[in-house]
Image (cartoon, rainbow, N blue to C red; front, top):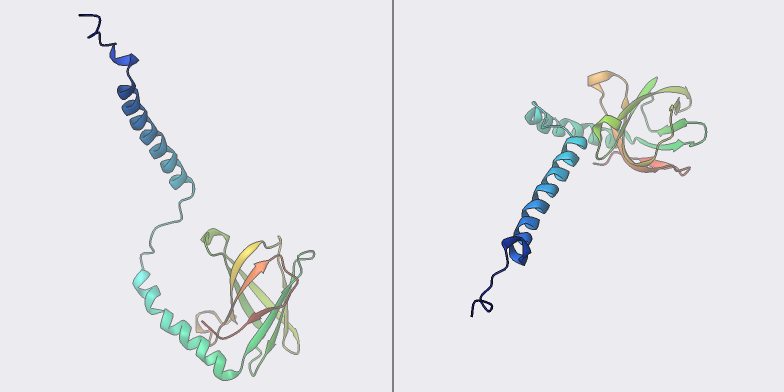
Length: 169
C-alpha cells in the first residue's frame, strides 16, 4: 500500500519547476527591458513644455505668412558630394536661410544648416556626411528668433529627387 502513495521529491515534479521558470523568465525579461530602456533613453519632458505648446501658434502664423507671400522651395541633396541646393520662389529672398533637419525619433541626430544665397533665389550649403532615412525639413530666414516665415517638408534620404518645401503644417 505504501508503494501506491509514494510521492517523488519536489525537484522531480513538474509544477515547482514550472513556477520557478515563470519567475526566472519574468526577472530575465525585466532586466532585458531595463537595459534597453537605459540604452535607448529618449529624454524627459522639457521643463518649458507649456511654452513650447503655446509656440505652435507662432509656427502656424509663420507658415500662413509664407503662404501669403507665395513662397515655395525645392530642395535637392546630392548623396555623393554632400551639396544641398534650395531654389526659393516667391517675393522674399534673404541673404541666408536656415534649414533644420529633424530626425523623427532621435533628437541628437537633428541638424541645423545655413544656406548662402548665390543668385536668383538659389541657396547652397554642404553637409559633412550623407543623410539616410526619413527627415522633417524646416526652412526659414536666418534672422534668428524673428524669422517671419517658414516652409516645411519631409524627405527620405538618400534621394536625388527634388523635395518640395511648402507653407503647410
